[in-house]
Length: 262
Image (cartoon, rainbow, N blue to C red; front, top):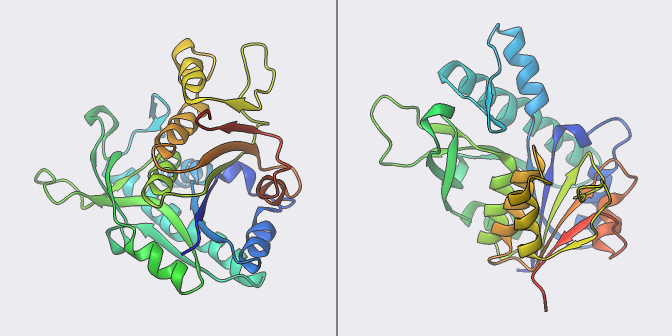
């Protein structure tokens, strides 16, 4: 099997003018093996509002009670996952939409009781990804996963996972050639807002420790660092730019690359 490219797409980068789907179809046509992981936070918040359920966050993670988990599962594994899968297939690609529950792909346990049913990944079972890739499909993964077998009584069999962390764990488990985050910013910036084109793991950790990297950038950098235990290279790029994904694969990307030195 060729080396895999893991692509994380966020709701903010999927719009009417977005070229990420076109780029994925083209890369698949070229014979590249892609695994796509997606989030969907904005749509979850919108649907929770329709149900009269307030959204609360602790350290950037959505506090997930039972009612919230049901909406998260419906929106991520249903609406968002099928929309992306349909977009790839309708443009001539071949994709299958799954969640971390399917094939026991993602197993986890509760991360922090204050956050409710939010999981931390303890195991990635790659068999379902390898089967789909081997059959010529792009797996499109929603970040809802299995609550590990030893889960406490009266807790649900599924958990809500941060999509950035899921992407990092899958990249590590698949020994990916590349992990690419398509975001709505130019990349990682220093304290003056200047784009940092390259970071070593140590430099990336220092940005988090100093508070220069904040908010949603923290899980992305942490996921890059996790992926680098087994993946070749990682990058955070602006998915709003035309054909940003293709340019990154062709070595003409303009975001931030995080990789080991030497």
